[in-house]
Image (cartoon, rainbow, N blue to C red; front, side, top):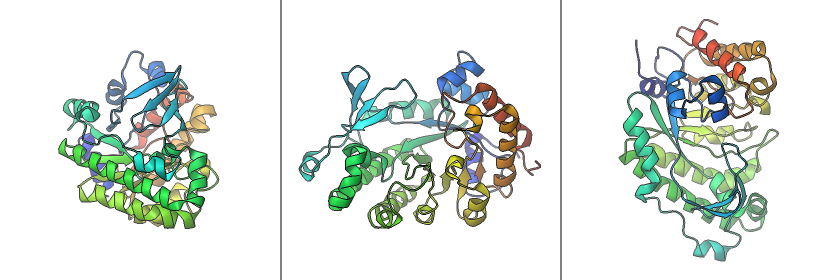
Length: 343
């Protein structure tokens, strides 16, 4: 059985039989790419490394406020740290009056989808094209600034609910545009937790965030999309709600937060697919090649049998990952990824 990368991921998300475990990363830092394959673009690296997906963000305009400080179309102010992701430092919404006057980015703007259209034209059918959208936490918290967002959650939950509802509606309209262009898989990158616990209590999550989470995930499913839900951190107090919201796959089963791949596969592996769990905060960054090989084998041995598993790091291949460790991780994957799994 020989499958295309897109077929391999779609079948894995449906828990159907595949030839081998699929693999991809949300991003591979350009410094790591340059160290392994000098001169290659991200897209060229995906083919060279035999990843199964190309991940795409929508296009947003930004204006420079001062050196290394930018404001995007949402009005979120971000600092360019020199890494692949900017750091949000402030947002435009502090009060209900701010929210009543606020206009979100136009979800139907044609320029929003130029990169997506280019990637689909070049790679669809050969690689899965996975679009980054959002659900209920990242954009609302950044629109307010994180500390103010948490305070307002207690002091004015109606304002938080209104902002979340607005973000859900905008993302569902962007999903409409994505589906028209041929997108089949999306991932939502909203983190709900840090290493020790969720960022909000389970009771607050159930009351404020869970209903719109079900709405946005249900909306994506109604549009025929497959959903990979990304959230770092210790999400066990929230995991039943996350699974119940209708996702197809959970990522990254964060090992630095103590997330146990075997426990989660045993409890939820018949309902959802799983992705990740190779520690990119410690093992890939500070560990040895031998430790990387052992951890990669462990993830394949636990995640692979029975299908429904996508091999990857526990977040991404960031700039601190040792190139030799990432090479060892992928060499180990290629050695043991074929079904039936024999590690």
